Length: 560
Image (cartoon, rainbow, N blue to C red):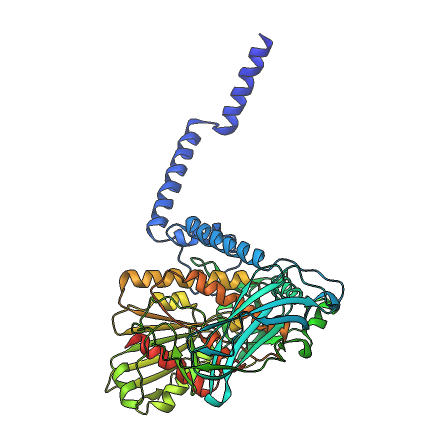
C-alpha cells in the first residue's frame, strides 16, 4: 500500500504543478489555440521567408539580402548542387593527384625530356594529322612514371599569320601524344611548351583549395556624410559581428565586418588588393621562377612542309548553337579565325553587322574581357551610341543603343568575387543566375556569358557552384523561351609573369574543363577564347582588337 500511496501523491503533485485548477487548464488550451492561429496567419503572409532564414545555417545577423526568398524545396536543391560539386571535385582530385617532391631535380625537365615525330615524312598534305610522342624525364635524366604535366602545344606559320592549338593526350605514365591537324599549306613550325611540371601543378592545386584570404576586399559604407571602410570577403575568419549578403536559393554568400553605427544596407562600393599570403613552400616556389615557366621542348625541330595535295574540304553546316565544339575548334589564317566545325558567314561591312544586329537585345554578363566587346562595337558600328548609365568607373553597367534599328547591347559585371584595385559599385550588381532570371527571352534576345579570371585565386568549389547555378538559370530560361540564344565565351590565357600561385593559366584550364563538363548537354554556342588565344599566341588577359574582332564574328555567326 505504501508504494501505491506514494504513486498517487506523485500523480497528484504533478497535476497540481501542471494545471493547478480547471481555469488554468482552460487558459492553457486557449493559449495553444492562439499560437496555432498565429502560425497560420504568419505563414499566409509569406513569413516562411523569415522561418527559412532562421533555419538557414548561414543566418546570423542579417544585412542587405539581395534575394531572400526561400526555394520551394531548399533541401533538395541544396543537396543536388552539393552532390554535383562533390562529383566534379572527385574527378578533379583524380586528375590532379598529390605529387610531393624533395628537390627540383626530381621534377619534369623540358631539356632532358625527349620528343619525336611518329612516322615522319618529308612532306605532308593539308588536312593530315601529325603525331608527336613526348617522354617526360626529370633533371637527372630519369624517366617519369606518372603524367600530369601542364603542356601547351601550338603550330604556326608566322609569314601567313597562321596558328592553331595542338591536342595533348596524357597516358598518365610519363608519356604524352601531341596531335596537330595541318589546317593550311606552307612551312609549319611546331611548338610544345612545358608550362608547369606535374609537381608544380599538384602544388598549385593544393594551394588554391587551402584558403580564401589571398585577396582583401574593402567595402565602403556610406551613411549620410559618414564614410566607413570595412573588410569583406567570401569567408571571414573573425569573431566580429558580420553583415551578410546572401542568396538563399543559390547558396551564394558574401560578408563584411559590420561597421559601428552604420547599417549593413549602407554598403555601396568595393575594391580589392592582394594580401601577400602564400600556401606554397620555398622549394615549390622554385618551380615558378619565370625561367621555368613555358619552356620550349621542341627547340631542335625544323619546320615541316605541307602541300595542298588537291584534298577537298568536308562540307560543314552553318554555325549554330548546340553544336559540339572540338579541340582545336579552329585556326587562324591571315589573322582571321576559321572554324573547324561549322561554316562561317563573313561580315565584311558595317551594313552586314547592322543587318545581323537589327532588333536584337544583347546582354553581356561577365568580366572585363567581355566588356572589350562593348568597346569594339562602339568603334566599328557607328550607328551605336553610348548611353550614360551613370555609375562609378570602368565597371559600371555599359549600354549601347541604336534607336532606329532597335538594337540594345548591355554589359554588366558579374558579382563577387571581382578583383580590382579600382573602386566599383555593388548597389546594382547581381549574380549572373539572377540576371538571367530577369530576362523574359524571345527570338531576338541573346545572352553572352563569361567568367573565370576573377575566380582563379579562390577554392574551386566557389567556381563550380556558380557555374551550376548559371546552368540551372539557363535551363529555366529555355523552359520559358527556348528560342533565346545563349553563348558561352570561355576564359582566355593571360600573362605568364603574373602571380603564378593566384593567376596561373593552369587554374583557367581547370575552370574551362568544368564549364564544358557542366554545359555539355545545353543548347548553347561556345566561343573557345582559350583555343583562340593559343592560336593567336596572345598571352594577355585583354587580347588585342583583332582577336576581339574574331570572337565577335564567331558570335554573329551563332545569332544570324
